[in-house]
Image (cartoon, rainbow over all chains, first blue to last red; front, top):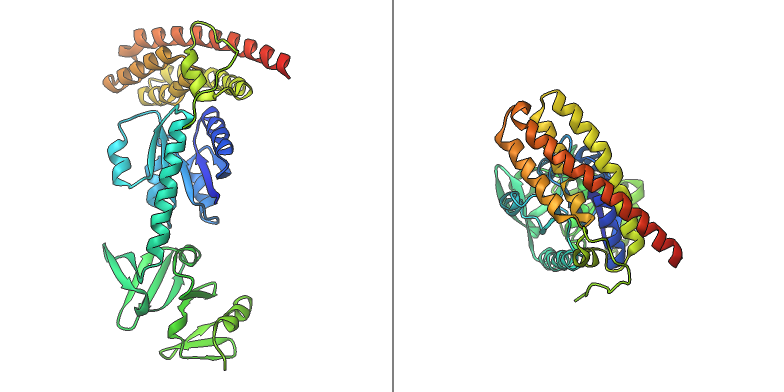
Length: 229
Length: 133
């Protein structure tokens, strides 16, 4: 498996050095190098990556401020020349912390941690629930209870039978993270729980009386997924 | 576990051979490129530091030295990296550039010497790599 990544680093030589290690590993695909956090965020708003190699002190936003602004949670390996950030790194739950310069052996150890965490995340994705950040806490939602998810710009609304939760996220990101056996994107603004669809008419589906549009682009896949006898 | 490559290239005495072997694993072409880009970045950042120092911007000066500090590690000049770290610490302790003048001149002298060494080594590496090509 290859991991998609970006490098956010204001030092060109450090980025070049890291790119060489990534190439040598054969499992890290570097999709871009950004000299500041703002440019990286622009890229990340339109592209999903598995991993970010992130410097901390940069002109403009710091690496930590970048993480605060992410709407999804790729793994992060901090690359910095200071050890003082270790506590913050722990707080942000980064995968590893590399002090520049680092050897190839140390780099490989970090990559192994990425693999371990990915395996854990994959195992977790197979469970019957998710956690979302809402109302200032992490709320557990059973997959079964979620009826559908609706986009609200930079936010999404989770609709369950008895409650609505609004959280900072995007449909695109959720599509990648939710259990694909159960959930399906049917429109750029909607993901639905396939087991909760009541009926389908023309270009709409209904869940508990709510009309949810099915886009032309998704209609074919929706029809393939439902069982018509 | 990856062991450092044993290379036939011998870095000059000022450079930490074992450390560079570990970093580059025998990729001397890569080492040459990093030496070259390190030289370019150190030189341009030094010019910026001089301007910021004249403006009395201690935090700006600190950030410049923080930025270039690892470059001395990438080229195996670990004592210089350590010295730049000390200057960065000095910047944390002093609010005015006037209090830093001596340390500023001292660190710049060391860096100028380092630039000379890196340039010499980069030429030596290039010559070696060209012969091998």
